[in-house]
Length: 386
Ligand SMILES: Cc1cc2nc3c(=O)[nH]c(=O)nc-3n(C[C@H](O)[C@H](O)[C@H](O)COP(=O)(O)OP(=O)(O)OC[C@H]3O[C@@H](n4cnc5c(N)ncnc54)[C@H](O)[C@@H]3O)c2cc1C
Image (cartoon, rainbow, N blue to C red):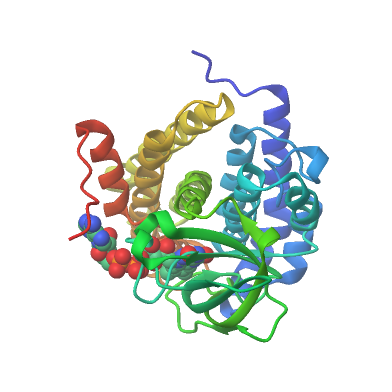
């Protein structure tokens, strides 16, 4: 077993670390304070090749392996989860789905625009009445002479206000259940596509989250991704990549918590000495360090399996469950190490705490990850509808 990264992976990590420190960290507090979706930063991320890291060069991507992608996402996640969400959605949920399920024509049409950042994409699965039970979604795709027309609503869609392309999951035949689902590549530049900003979020203030009304949105046959009945598989395979990305971003939050806590504990003095010299403070830092390392190893294992084309849904769920819960625990502990100073945004730990909270919810809640893990271990599917 080899835990060493290759020279190329080390370089990719060092470059992403430098980029994060120089470009992401300095903007993160102001963007969060101003609830600003930073398109200038998105363009810089795209110029780095981070929006299409795992997409082959022939489609405009960087052609990197999953482990390298995870290293990039970890670094960006340490800097700012809001901008990390852009990478996770664009690269994993949108691009990877098109790469896996798209026709050659679709890949050549969409991927270069998405990898370059010319277009942003969003992933429209969740609805007001359908979250964890994604197969019960109600958005309706109705056949027309020239293709399909979509009607329904989507909820909590990251980048829904800025996306030029939306992957919209819809039901073609309600009598078929999940076998009737299909995924459509929707041009958002038409009147029936109506996104609306979701305000007053707990965290991810610098991210764009939308509810979307779909009123007679037209799509042609050539804009279906996969076949009728494959929509659920398209969604689940995209989430396999998305969960990996969220997990890697959470390793970044964990590492940021360790770094910030060590720095603060060495500087802050109480009782005439640095608080880092108190065993109870060291214990909090040690707990964070263990959670960080364990999460990173689980992410690397999932990436290792993905790079070899081996089954990895179980290992990805384990990494997502562990890393997201660890990020929350580390952020909570990091605020404790900072005392009152951790309760305001002078230090990033306050934002880490608010931004980490959503990670155990989106791309499958922690409970859903446990059901996936439980199903793999017991052979019994607990997802059966009531
Ligand atoms: C900021 C943000 C960004 C998001 N971005 C996107 C996006 O880009 N695209 C997209 O499609 N969605 C997105 N989502 C939606 C997200 O994926 C859903 O919120 C998530 O899947 C949970 O669905 P729900 O909110 O409807 O909760 P529910 O499914 O209603 O779950 C509520 C609670 O019940 C539990 N629960 C549900 N079913 C079971 C079960 N069978 N067993 C045990 N417990 C269960 C859940 O774990 C949870 O604790 C985003 C959400 C947020 C908050």
